[in-house]
Image (cartoon, rainbow, N blue to C red; front, side, top):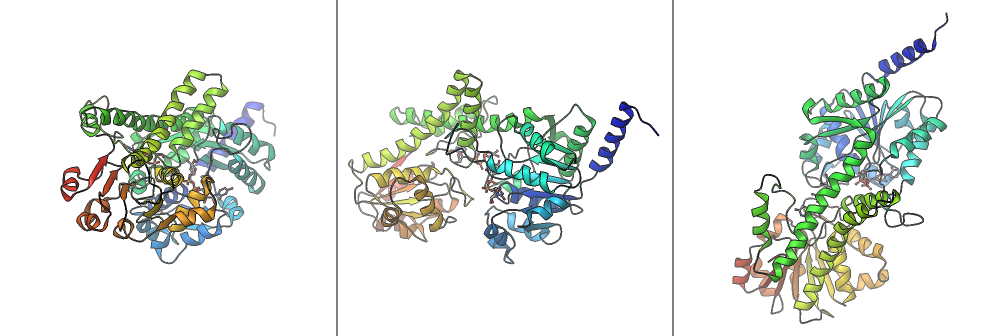
Amino acid sequence: MEYNHNEISAIAEMKISVFFMKVKNICCIGAGYVGGPTMAIIAQKSPEINVTVVDINEKRIAAWNDPDVEKIPIYEPGLSEVVAEARGRNLFFSTDVDAAIDAADMIFISVNTPTKTYGIGKGMAADLKYIELCARQIARVAKNDKIIVEKSTLPVRTAEALKRILDNTGNGVNFQILSNPEFLAEGTAVTDLHKPDRVLIGGDLDTEAGREAIQALVDVYGHWVSDDNILTTNVWSSELSKLTANAFLAQRVSSINAMSELCEVTEADVQEVAKAIGMDSRIGPKFLKASVGFGGSCFQKDILNLVYIAKSFGLNEVADYWEQVILMNDHQKRRFAAKIVKTLFNTVSGKKIALLGWAFKKDTNDTRESAAIYVADYLLNEQAEIVVYDPKVTQEQILADLDYLGTRSEEENRKLISVVNSAQEACEAAHAVAVMTEWDAFKTLDWEAIYEGMLKPAFLFDGRRLLDKEALTAIGFEFYAIGS
Ligand code: UDX
Ligand code: UDX
């Protein structure tokens, strides 16, 4: 029997349609802050889908498999309960990447895409080497058609590069590439995943196979997200939306932080200003909290990426506009540290300064790009002795963060900084205390006892607008808060 060209296409499309209709096995490459929680929720909500999360980091996978579910490697409120429910039922963690790729109909790529530290685009562009390694591994292993989902935040048009690698090195199997950026925020990942403002899926809307692939992923989220909250776009809009969302959010923080400095030299209070503008429904109240500076793995990286893309298209004004958000953030961190030095009679040399909090925000043990790292580094350059307490961050991590900056030798870092197990202990005999992370527990510390144990005058710097100025001043603290 002979078929004409159109009939062959139709048959090919039918084959794809049948294949893509129902996803039974999902694999996710990368068991990090994004891959781990996202897959745990998909497994929890879709009991008939087997979800295997793989990672090359054996220690991380072993921790995800720890019989004591409280020991999973990522701290997120509510996550251990979800893992306890699904792990071993339809949620698996493994280092056997090939086997998981082979078994999967749908593969999420959730590996890290750090800012490049070498070559062209150094310090700005996203390093895509892990993404490319994943694509090559998938191409090598895959024996049947697969849907590939970009979960990692990527520069616009990465999907195209992925497709070319897959199509040119694969074994002739069909790949559909989708972009499904993650909007969860750390510390609230479980709630954000359970009740997302929107799920964004970018795919090839122009072909039947592309639309089928999109539908397959819509069906996965459809287990718990209503259709109204699932948005489908072309791949490039989806990729760019992720960078844009993070750039807008970071820009709000830098904007209010810029106003915080102005408030400090006038009689205004940034919290009052934020409230007043936030009640304008066009502006809205969220993301207007002045702070010692935003951190986290995404904001800075994504904006740098945006700046790099704009520059590479010759859009210098666009690039400069967004770069200013980062410059303002760097300024805010430096300004806070400089304020400490200035207030302590222009020298912190040999003085003990307690930093409360090291995580980039509360309710997470993640420290990537945390303002605390840069403030500590600044104060160490001024020869301060730093003592840190964070309820969830380990000493090993704190030292690794400082060593990574490469400002001084590892021995020196270990000489100048110590990490303790309680806030009270950190503040004992300190000249100053600085609140770096807005952990709720810091609000209810026994501040009177802390005051008693400190050298006088006892300085308290609130980098998060967390504490009650009146109460602390009444105790006797010399109190400074960002933006007032
Ligand atoms: C990462 C990216 O940083 C972010 O841009 C994206 O939006 C989502 O994925 P996150 O999950 O926070 O975010 O990263 P991380 O916690 O570093 O986890 C990535 C994991 O991928 C690591 O555990 C790493 O070992 C693993 N990995 C990396 C692989 O399994 N294979 C690789 O080739 C590279
Ligand atoms: C962010 C995005 O919110 C999320 O959608 C995306 O998927 C990943 O990046 P995350 O970095 O986890 O999430 O935390 P986020 O709550 O956005 O906070 C980022 C930083 O901004 C933190 O350091 C936080 O303390 C700071 N921040 C946030 C402020 O200083 N003020 C605010 O009003 C809000």
